[in-house]
Length: 268
Ligand SMILES: Nc1nc2c(ncn2[C@@H]2O[C@H](COP(=O)(O)OP(=O)(O)OP(=O)(O)O)[C@@H](O)[C@H]2O)c(=O)[nH]1
Ligand SMILES: [Mg+2]
Image (cartoon, rainbow, N blue to C red):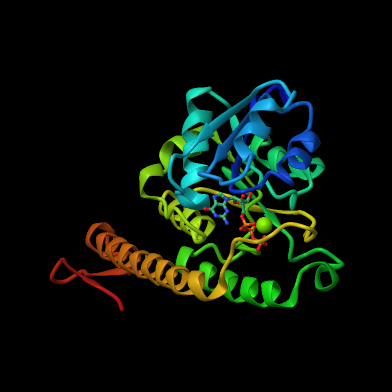
């Protein structure tokens, strides 16, 4: 438990036999449940997770690959069934510092946010730690995600290190979430529809011996389409909202009464 709240950690894992043990070993003791979702790995990922000595580890395996978002949704569902109060997502490739998890959990427990996400872009050694191509792509996608979700304060839209409260998780339509690399962007869009509070928490960018599954030429198109769709939806929602307001709101312009005729007219 962390500050008297049960914490579940969801770990989406695809061919992570090398780094999954490092990830599991580093998890803080206060984590109550660890849910490893083996996304149809071709290596020993699932076996390594099953053999790990840590308490509270469950291993769920997909028979066919569903993508990182699909794996997280499977983990989220399991965490809800375990009644965890707070659910954190940590990649299996040891790119997230587990000691920084409390930075994500504190604002949720203190009631400052419903969803906390890592922000690597504020790190003082960012340009030394994050490859240039990643940094450029991240900045562009962050700008577009701000527009599409309306969360204008959000930074590092692609950071997968996140924490969410159970209540918020229960309110988002898990089955509709985009299952592949645009997952964090789609989660933000869904949270925005529900007016949830999102907070950025500083975390360290870590790039080491992991192999990224991101094929830039394959992922950019679908993510851009996803962002455009969310942005248009937001635009339509806002317009409908404004129309409804105009229909319901009493006319607030000052009224002048003509004392001779007793008629009222609005002053524009
Ligand atoms: N590539 C890939 N990763 C998956 C999949 N399902 C689950 N994952 C896991 O999702 C996590 C993130 O995947 P990465 O491909 O490293 O993406 P990333 O860490 O967001 O991006 P990089 O900064 O390029 O490393 C890892 O723990 C993967 O094992 C999948 O279908 N494909
Ligand atoms: Mg990675």
